[in-house]
Image (cartoon, rainbow, N blue to C red; front, side):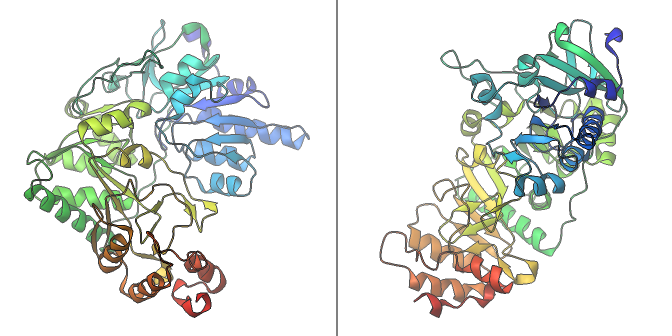
Length: 497
């Protein structure tokens, strides 16, 4: 492959306006960095000449500053899916400078294969090794790499020496057949290997190899504070009680955990509770806290799509690969997030809500119903199919001016039918087997901040007669009050009688 080496600028020069690119990685790990940066520079140069230059972009999930960040600021993205978390990308899509469509993460690879979306012209994939016959060893994430390697007409590889070639064996690459030929995915425990340790690429499609030595761009999460610590403790206590009641097997069940500081706090609290046995993880993102729990013997095995680790932790993993290669596998996201496997394994699914309402509906993605935050991610893949679906959230935000629990969510990502448990720092609302009125009473009593309890009880009294006592005129009063006054506590129900 040596004759195919080129610079990032040479690779970017091959991509034209209106082309569709697809990137490896999942979160800001395993993503190409040099070529997208060069592509952003090309876009700026073309725009300065008065020429149009934008590309469509498929990714596994969010990417780093050297992809979403630079391309968004260069106004170089025409459309984008399925998930992002970059501040510049967020501004661009909310301003309609790019078209963004949110999508369950498990669905994108098959959407591409089915032809529901146009296939990519280019796949840009980060690897740590490539053989002459096209066996590509990925780095710290898989994402949609197998699918885009098959579908793209042209492939550019970033050969990143920051990641050791000895990562071979850490990945489990498997693509299901498409209907009507699809069979069951034969994963019966998180540690089952069913695929190949590498992505097989047609060497004829590899048009360039760009050598790099660049670290991932994972930023440290906010440290655990009193609120997130209490949420984690409430989750751990609830799961222990479920196990003692016989509703969770004494051997426990695999855990799926979302991304962020609340998720880290939850896993940390579960690790500290020695009444909970050592457990396995089947999830999309493996974070720093999981590595700590592995070292302590509290996590036996973790299957995921990416190692979303801060640089010091990832380097520690690489320094002890013989140990960690026995402890986790990285899979494509349509396998790590597959609903069939989630239901078969009986996952305990723990995800973070941006907003919940008193009837158990969840908003994971939109601020005040209009502005996209990040996206639905993989939470829908898991919660609908989990053995036990838990959503966590701090009860308030912005010093109490926003209640995270409202009369009606301003945007619905997960309906009451998929949500079994809601947990805040104040307590646990078990919603199983409850009517809408009972759910509302349980959530207000156990999860709502004390300053909002009476306000929400008064809202229930405004509800019309019916199975779900919503008041259409007042359902979004929390949101409209915040927009007008900057504080949801200023709502006046007299205006809605």
